[in-house]
Image 1 (cartoon, rainbow, N blue to C red):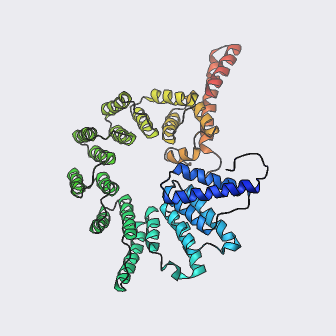
Image 2 (image 1 turned 180 degrees about the horizontal axis):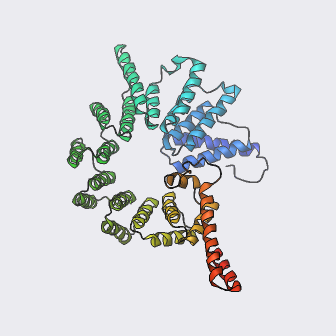
Image 3 (image 1 turned 45 degrees about the horizontal axis):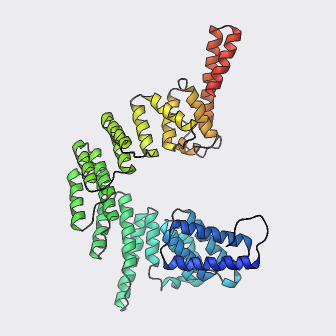
Length: 461
């Protein structure tokens, strides 16, 4: 194996061993289930071999790499890496560019992450090179493009393209050809999920009915998505959610933790206090442990509706059961404390997090800055800590500005280059320090006032 070292060139024997090992890893990855960590290690190994030699993967190995990325990758970073592999293949004259097989493997990877722009570019490039008939033998070409559109939250365009796929299927059946139904069902499932994200329950039901007719549509995720659409739409009464649950049960779908979370969410949105507690106990009875999503759902809705005692009971339950607070639950508690005019607790939590070097989420920082901007003179030391966080880049200023756009007139975008939020906090801190200095000078002799003013400025900054 090639190992990291100084800029000494690798020997031919080292490169040969590393290449052989990488090829064996690719073969094993394709035939046996592997984890994302294995994929990352394999990619790091390839980049090291690539930097130490002129060796590059060929067309067959590129396709294997793309299949591995499609299977285990998480995050859009892998779109860039997949594109880099194909671009390198195109640049090598001996490979004569990427073949339709390799290009289709790239399109599947890009579709997984909803990168429609790159999918269209790859399709256009291969069409210009091989003509429009290159996709004739690809059984999942249109379905893959439907998946890309659906995951990019473009359900209308995805539905139009899926109709073309249905037409191709009918034409193939007339010619006596059989086309696998699985790619069509996968695309239909993604379209259904896209309609649920678009809050279009009617069209989502149509897709789900077609899936059930094809023998699919019995996954918990699809039914949870359908349940969530009805839960967050206040036009639907609670008994309709129970009807969706009844159809879910009759289809042989089992409930999971997300199902119970959605039912509690729907109950709280409709002000049904007894119902959400009932579903919480049902969740525990069914053997599902309440998770961070459960408590975030409860805290956000209880704090929003002003039910402080109920929200505090949830916080106590988390502490008693050693449930670690997430950024979302913490920000919900901070928002609740701010609504209760208990800003002192918010600031004490913020000071502890900053001074001990803990991680601060954007949502938490936004609550703190909102309180600071309401009363900058009262929170001089916290203003200094907030300035430090922004200057040290512990928190993204642009994300906070976006969250505070309604509170900051004239600062409604994160694309302003002059760091407006930091400047605003610095101006507030300067004015507070100046007011301390002026007040001290009027009340104490000159020597004593100078010492107190220095102390006030240190506390502010």
